[in-house]
Image (cartoon, rainbow over all chains, first blue to last red; front, side):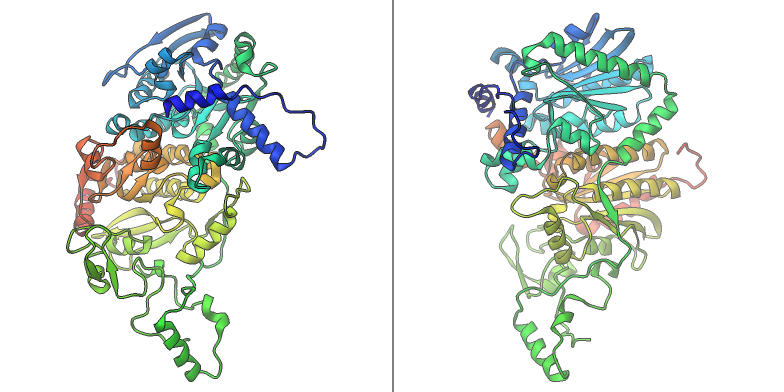
Length: 345
Length: 283
């Protein structure tokens, strides 16, 4: 699969810029092509990751290693950096630029120890009064047996929980692939920024397609349905601001991409460090507490309908009813007067 | 009122209106009446059948003590999601089939006379998937437990986050964890019970994070769906991978508890964990 990921990325050339719009509203096919083009840009092998971006953004970078329990996961970079007037802690996933580096960095797919290293550094940042800047670019946390054995779910849950309560400002930048829980584990922030061609989703479009459409060939359809693009995510309130990329995409100009992210991050750091910590943490709680769309209805809970195909017992009952009443009342089939089963406890 | 046959059962129950159920594990034909008596555990091989939320609440709580909260929460369709079917149609179908509004039910009840906040998931409702409603109920259950200073119990049964709600479903991991972190800071205990299956975003948020984690025997528990994992890494999976016993061996589950013992075990644990009402802690 690893080779397939690589192969797929290499096979497909960077998409051309969207053709000049003929109509104001894109057709579904155009929309799908545009979203899929962004997915490919987000996955571009030459897209800048945390280390390439910090090389542009920071005057000093000190990387820290190891989770103090198992090892050092090179799919996650963590440490300190000086960005403008701010000393901050930085955390991000790092994919490799070539096959050799990708093997070392596991194609940017962290094991639990990667997230535990991130947590260790973020807790240290809180104790040291340093704001945190995270750079998110991950296909997903590594799903293999070693990952499960060492508790990838527990590591992600812990990191998400930690970030909801850390008493220090957190700026998150989705720079490439925002791949589900493996992304969210370092993406809970006071403000969430994203590069223009970054994508964010609850599951990979291939995974979504193979479950809901029963074929991964429908990945582009799934990507469109999930509204993965940064602009769509901003409309949903998951992302706060979108940072425009240089013409042709972030991979064409690391310098300019880094400068743009730096300006946006500094603006947020200046703003967030002025907010009292108590208020900051409460606002962060509210931010995540309010995400998600639901309605509250006041009527009774829906009652189960009778089975659609009647068995012998039902037919017998129907006959009996027909005999015991003047007329059968088929409209009442869907309604029953007794309370729903779940209140029987 | 229509005439009721004594043997008629609603579809709501795990074992619908037929007399026999074939155990998927040992192929034994089981008489449904008997299965009910054994709490839907196969008497011949110990296979734990999946439970509806109503059956689960009935098995765990003192009779008549459940007071449901927020029963009216229902999903919206923030993405306008359509796959083979439109999301609102899937919701409507699931509501009609189960009599539930979404995949979780929460409220207050008593276990051997100890008051708890309890949330129970229902796999029958779209695979127990977590969207905004499940996330909201978990958060409200945690906030309710905190406010009334009673232990929180969550019984999970879920395939993970609900794809039809996109990243808003993913954000429920943060919503639920934020509420649980506050519960923990206030020293109010939380017991997670993982039943078959507990996977994906539910396992990677509240289910994995109990002060005490219990699991039912042989329950499928894992981060990546078996299909996703095996397909992605092209590697053979160890036997018993992602089963409750695997998690137990690797230190992520405190105890594997057979269904017949679950109520008693929870009651015993609560006697150690229950926060004293006078204990002052920051909310």
